[in-house]
Length: 139
Image (cartoon, rainbow, N blue to C red):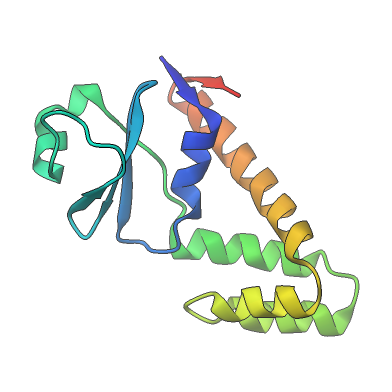
């Protein structure tokens, strides 16, 4: 079975643990937030119950959760050579919402390096997950 790399990576990026992604191979991604469906409408699918009843048609995409996202932030912070910047990023990564982390990134003009770092980590997670689940990635 084939799956798009961008679709797998998308499942890592939403900043809430209560969001679940399901993939309909080469068709669309369904996103559920607190039981409500978002994204492109799919005939006959309106709830998590519908997904469960047709589970063979879907692939539940991976989620690294808040702990995983925090680990990625801490990894980026650890790579900083400037001690002050590293400490500010580490402290901001401890903030539950992650908003402080983005503020520090903006102040330190590290937004683009952060996005590049994060996307590379998510890309590697996605590739590993696809290998473990015998899925062929479409890049």
